[in-house]
Length: 388
Ligand SMILES: NC(=O)c1ccc[n+]([C@@H]2O[C@H](COP(=O)([O-])OP(=O)(O)OC[C@H]3O[C@@H](n4cnc5c(N)ncnc54)[C@H](O)[C@@H]3O)[C@@H](O)[C@H]2O)c1
Image 1 (cartoon, rainbow, N blue to C red):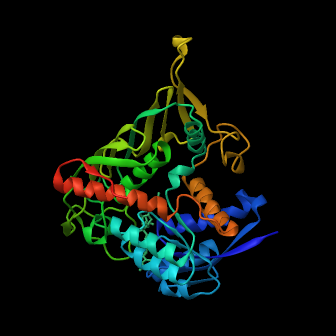
Image 2 (image 1 turned 30 degrees about the horizontal axis):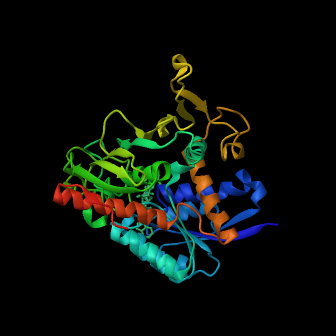
Image 3 (image 1 turned 180 degrees about the vertical axis):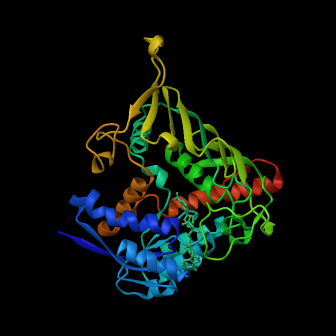
């Protein structure tokens, strides 16, 4: 039996396109599930973007005011892929209208707004999901299974990082990403993924001490509606101030007693998208980086034969969760957009089942509480407790 779910997408930039593409892929990649996304309406205040997206992805119509998406009775679920500053307002309106929500991270401009989004969704009883897409790499899902089965033993320490050079060019435009009024900088953007990954792999963070810095203090002012955050201006373009952080680091303690370090940066040279971690337990260790997302490094302590006690490389394959939906072959790897397909499939599956999935707004709220402790630590210069 086929179940159709009416979809609206709000904000047709990079992520709006990625979500639309992902919904379209579900009847192909997850054919057995019988879920048929109906692309009802897409919204963007830049009409050309909305119109292009309608034609490209096959939406039934486009609008320039996102409220028309929420008001459409054919829309059962919305993807919120507008800038962070819009997330709370859209989430509240969507929840009040009874729409299920897949919101990009961060779920609010500031941690408080993420908590308010979570509250609104809970009160309205709608199902939620969050774009913490790195979770969905098949070898990572397998890593989580290994850790939950106790294969590494008690966890002792964890290092997570998201080092990305997307803003490394000092002529990169001063988009909404660099304005404090529009939300946090790297703490909301890259660090939210790193915190969520730490929670998924090593469990909740309970206390921390954190630092931050702005390394590139001015950028060229962009023309409204033109380009994405990868576009650059001229060296002589008029400039404005960067008002949120480029860099964040933290020492953290986990509820299970493990100790850890987190680091994220958006202007770094060298690393392109090093969203990675290394986790250690008393019986072994695992490490992974998105830059080689189809490989998992696994070490099992081997006291009987220390000569072979070292990291082994596992290649992604059909024995790992979801991989077989994309390819029957070992080492025929998935890419970023495939993670978005798994994400949107899992979201729609939760709607069809009528059950809250993970990561939803509860997991985003857990990330937000860690971010709140980081913000407090920037002010106090001390260790801070994560307040639940
Ligand atoms: N999960 C990930 O890996 C990932 C990657 C990139 C971005 N993101 C998140 O996705 C969101 C969007 O980022 P992006 O890179 O697609 O940005 P983008 O700037 O490429 O696109 C944002 C779009 O929203 C539109 N917009 C602006 N105001 C709007 C409004 N009031 N209503 C509807 N649309 C509006 C803009 O015109 C633009 O087309 C952000 O929250 C960001 O943090 C997540």
